[in-house]
Length: 102
Image (cartoon, rainbow, N blue to C red; front, side, top):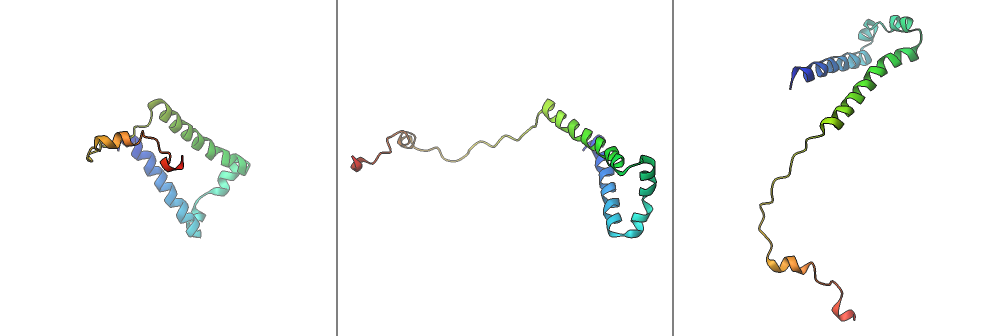
């Protein structure tokens, strides 16, 4: 994996670990300056918007890159089973009506 993919993944995992520790340990939660961030933003909705806008921009960027470059999917391996006999290919084209039904 290239460095351009490892760096955001590492930052994301570190933030996830801090978030889990903040939920599980009140001491860790006290180290995060949420009060100062709320005072700086002025409103908790502004703080959520500041966090949500880059996240939505990242989602849009990933979706746009998928539409321009496409998704490479694996091709299935060729079938290596036995070939069916000739009569099997024509048996599916025969009428399936009941002969004794009239």
